[in-house]
Image (cartoon, rainbow, N blue to C red):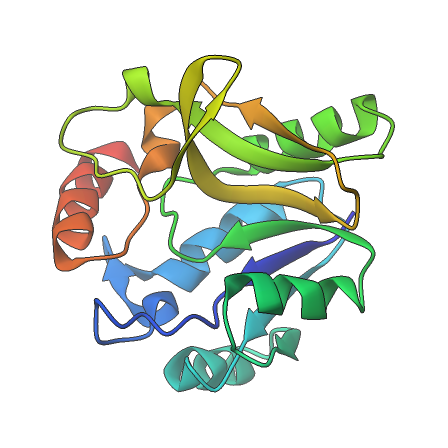
Length: 190
């Protein structure tokens, strides 16, 4: 199983490529790369686009394996990546509290389910602190879950959530508020 770090979004609310924004003195892309390297993912690529030129240049300087996506939107880019890789773990570059063990857990769950599904990483909404603003909330079996930006992506029509009990996984950097809050937590957490 390979991992693809998604780092080609527009980041319009922050005004700067998310991948190169620093938290705790580290660029977000580097935080995610470290976690992917600590995981059982066999290899990884970084998906960039013309929407994130600073991240793309940074990855080139670091000599990371990069894939250029069309940058037309999240789902469009996933379809583009699926046309080249029939299954992969997608890891958003803006989830600063991701760990290798989270990636391992979702990969293991995928293989336990016989590989005929896609997996959406999620956290129960009721364990998330009130100061964390969820990005995407959905309901599954009468429970509100928050998507965390960690998924196993396939062409399967069936999708199951994999629920983590780590509220920090729900921290996703989309706004200045998110960045400030994550920076405060990061100084204590890491």
